[in-house]
Length: 399
Image (cartoon, rainbow, N blue to C red; front, side, top):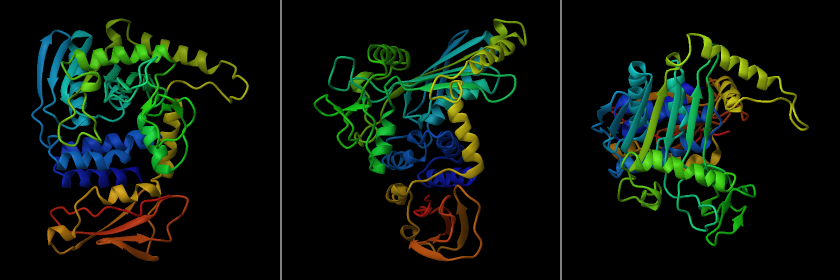
């Protein structure tokens, strides 16, 4: 189930040099994205994370430094660490500051791609605070009226705590779509909807192989939001901005230099205890009670589709597409390369219950696939692994 996938990702990242704690943070973030159905920020990112760690472009043991700059503010030097590790530390600091001052803002520089922004905002909401997360990214979006990419997808997230139940979570790119979704379509060999991207000439395209840039959400409005996020996450933190940000997949000789802004707000500093939570529930109830328009079954709250996906995938398993096999195979060192005898046997069942003795097929050194696993779930993997760490990749984790 999801815990097995997180374990697999963690072990791959440890094999690439991360500490156990750092690897667990990154793995939890990736699996959380897949649970919510946002696979563009899930385990599909594992191969490039490992590649950049191996090349020394991301620090495996970053020296993170926090400096308080005022009663409600701080800066954080991420030491070029993994974005998830750096941004989580920043959000923890923002929550601590908000506990003292009511509001906490932490500007981050020296970081990298951090996955889904909502994961960090939710961290604050689960502690009773409104969580804010902003990040800029490599230039993948054309400005309104332009034909070349000049801004990132520049996501923002706001998580609102509730008295009972999961937070209400807005997690959105300021582009019409995150470029990760174009990458997913490219890997799956399917077209993208009109209005997502443009080609090298700035013309609309539905071919993900021809897509060179995304378009801003709602034209000038998304463009304006992207600019604001660029300023808050990039300029305010002293990071590179716009086209100066290094590309994660293409610039494999230098760090990205990404910045973030993480924030937390304590509602108790503004309203009497319980009033905020009651007001949120009242507003949510009004929205849910709105009669649905034609073609809709109900009105959903921000983040509700993703929360339902999280519950469904937690119960039924996380789909792992067949087309990820090749990239996953490259994500970890082979057992053969270590020269050690493979002696430890493990069973991973990603997305479904483990299957007992059945029909096994050897697909790579140290990896066997149970070919009789339920085709509507995922294939069970039996791995022989040596210590301290070769991690053969589960090329058969498929639906």
